[in-house]
Length: 202
Image 1 (tube, rainbow, N blue to C red):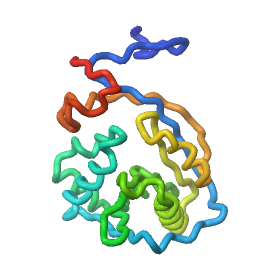
Image 2: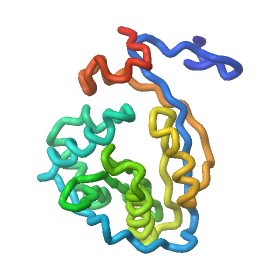
Image 3: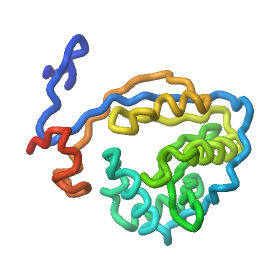
């Protein structure tokens, strides 16, 4: 490490104790081609502040497999306020009476839509529902309307995520490195989660 920053830009740098790191891929879409038809097998149920517990439960069920943690550290009243923000559109993806997934799109920047969270619970992965949920997301974003639809994913996510988003029409345009407090040390995730990632006390 140097005073200029955390990383050696010409080699590898150890991640400090108490932290985790991932490589982030940013992807965007500037125009739909064409706007897909939403899948009627998936019903989107809008989640508001009063649904914060339901939101958190779906988030946890999806994210336990992929190190999702940022929403778990938000105080209940702050999460409720976020879900009540008119620029945040969060939905439970409902399939056959079950909460099968989560879609959250941020419209707070004029002319843009960002997929903040997109995922399915394990029982619904690999059954075509991801494509159906993305069709809903694209139809919603482009009907806003917007000039740019974008998202980011990282190396802690599903290994097929970048390929799925590219097949959906998104184009990678930037890489980043994300450093965060290890959620197993903050209490957001159990200490035994992700044994393949070293747990190092700060």
